[in-house]
Length: 85
Image (tube, rainbow, N blue to C red; front, side, top):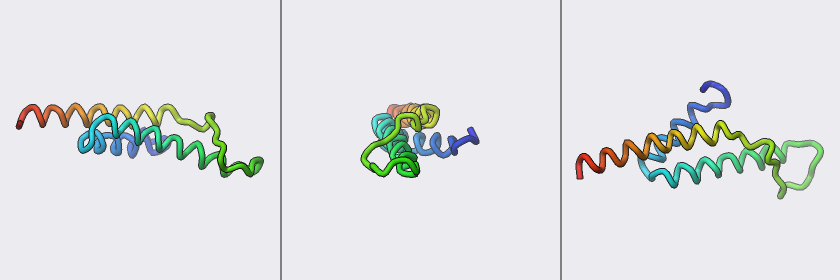
């Protein structure tokens, strides 16, 4: 969990799942990984085309940890809504 700030991905997914639901957590996880792919490609000294991005820099573990946090957050959210409403 300490690698690549995965705890921050988990916490972010958890908060998003609690507040906005699982759909938002999955969307943000994909958006963050897309941003990382674009950013990694822009730092490459061999390319000047900033519109392209590299799938090899997509980190499936970060994506999965964010989604797992979102699942846990949304389960807690639905438990609280079902319990008190």
